[in-house]
Length: 385
Picture 1 (cartoon, rainbow, N blue to C red):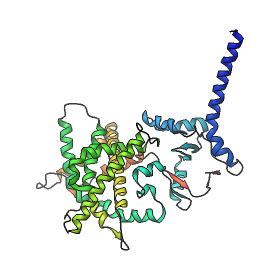
Picture 2 (picture 1 turned 90 degrees about the horizontal axis):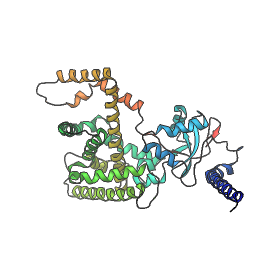
Picture 3 (picture 1 turned 135 degrees about the vertical axis):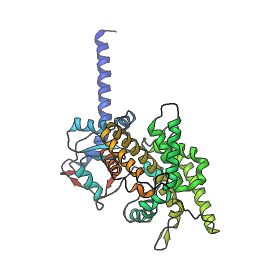
Picture 4 (picture 1 turned 180 degrees about the vertical axis):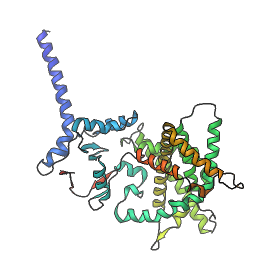
């Protein structure tokens, strides 16, 4: 073979590879952007990624390797600090907004925007979870569930149980003659607490199974929606089916007991949700199960992460740790001698610790993003999306 022919083949292969790469990299841009026309629809700068997967690989890798901010940092480095970028995320062409004022505009404008979570998220958390609803139905469920779940009354009902579980769990960890992974252990504590609050003690024998299935469900929420064996989304769908089956059995049992007037005096959140009504309309089984799935998943995850970050920040700022510690010591000193543990009213006295928690939630976003869908063409900063 002549050397010249070999170079021609090599050049053709390289050129063909570059052409294929360029065609694939430009496919989403052509299909979703170019056909809109730049004059009528000026879109923000950005990268539409690869066909079908879009920007999800770089997005998921950023989370996998513990540097989620790098995804946006890369956008800023490539396209400037505009605060608004086009991308292809979770199977749909998307606009990413990062500036506080722009985020506020998108989040507060219910006339032009609605909840827009990916189809895969709604499949996992359910049609009747808050994420899958908008408008009046969303507001109705918020109203019906706010009173039983939020506020000091709800906390006061379970204060003793929370105290007992926390003390016992921390005692066990203190006696363990080994290093512990703090976040994992705190997740176990918060999961046990929130399961008891919502479902009572009847699910205690299934606690380990429930914890494992919730972990599978949560992993699927952050994965690509590939419903094939071996993928996180496939495993998450199976976990949802198991969890729904367990919760449906609990609901059926509660309804059977109520029909025989055998309801418990101390009601858990499931019973409270079964009792609430508006204009004679109560929550149906699907609504109750999807709401509980959503709150159980979000509640123990966010509480555990907030606890971890608050603990970490206090360790990094000894002067703040001393102030928080001093406040606790003063509360203990003023406690009646007849009381041996934390009293509910003492929680309201923890003013400095409350500020620590507020600052933690300000400094660290527990939920890294939210999804909204434009109902019509919207112009922000002279750019449409």
